[in-house]
Length: 555
Image (cartoon, rainbow, N blue to C red):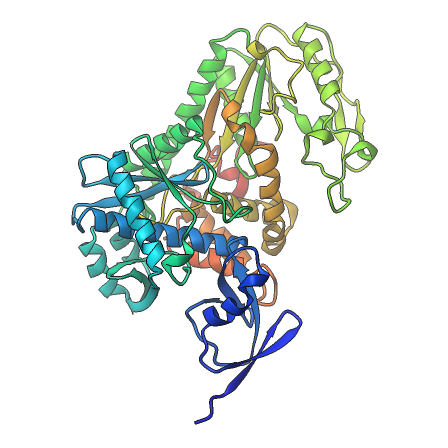
């Protein structure tokens, strides 16, 4: 019987393939054209794994590990490889529990339970086993099972958090991925085989280990692990707090919402954050030399509400805080640097009038009266509309801006007069043992809701500019986070259950033919894991109110 011929458009070329050929075979014919490994494809705008086969005419676009979607597939697949190696090295012990905790450096911090200790000897055995499987290029197979049947598998491997998660899953079936006999569930697509997983390293760290991975910009380079100890401790403490509340995963959170009154959990989480803010205020007030409180953090971290709540706690300690927005110290519009596209680059340090900022702050520190500018964003020029400001003995300036932790921004000020705070929404809740919730996703949900409510921007627009926002953060904020005297985690363990009601309608509004549709679909699928909570349970002074509205602060 003659085999049907399928027409495939790749770029501007039309190619012909026999019906039933795998996307992996097609990708192999074009791999030399790409610097990075092809790991997925879009076929007629639908994302496909490489093991799938071609059965109709198609327009194909290749996805590599240099793309966000491809990089995520690589990270998921590496996690599966790590789990398989641990189970092999530990003789498939039923007591073994490997848990992916959170991101550190360029990798994933993991802990291991059910064994005596994690040491270098064990790590070397695991790494050698991983390399054996990479060299053998074992297929990563996928099968679909009934959701209820998957629970038996999770019991077999001691994956209790997955068992809780699927208790609330409405879909009838679930996809499982397998390396040889070991199966696991992962949120998203995988690479086709272990031979793709050539770039990784393992490091002992703290009480566990770090699976160090390449970053998307350099998918074939694994940089040496550089621990960010301050950030790590904040993440570790937040995770431990969640564990103490028996909220280790989304399934545990759903149990709390469905089986108990969530109000107490919400109030306990809010009280925990308030205590942390009070501790920071106590640290500041105990040092009479501090005059400049510098606050920085990435987008949608809740910096504004945090500043208000910190100011209240400072007042309770007898201090007089004054808010200062660094945005008022932009250079004149015509002096603003431009990016590679010729657009004004308002994110770079060169967009700030550092000399003027330093002069104003230095004079205030000396006790002089100073006229501070207000930047007119319509005209692109500074104006002087308010009366002079002078610092009294108990006065402090609460200064917020993306460059506040960059030493160059405050070079004119003595270090002894600064107190630097880094704030970010560091998600401590994971989907289950092996699927983490990226911190960037949590902030994106916040941003989508706030943009729609306060700026009239659609979810499509917010998603479209999110990659640019993240690039700015990676260049101008993250490199200086360890400069902070203290870090504050603004993430609330319950917040995604609240944001779900706000975000879902906005994401459903993105049309299928939009470039942002796939990301919207991914986010909707993720939200499907959560049981929702009504916003009436959220206190008026909560950081979450900065995004959903109804707060007690003027923002």
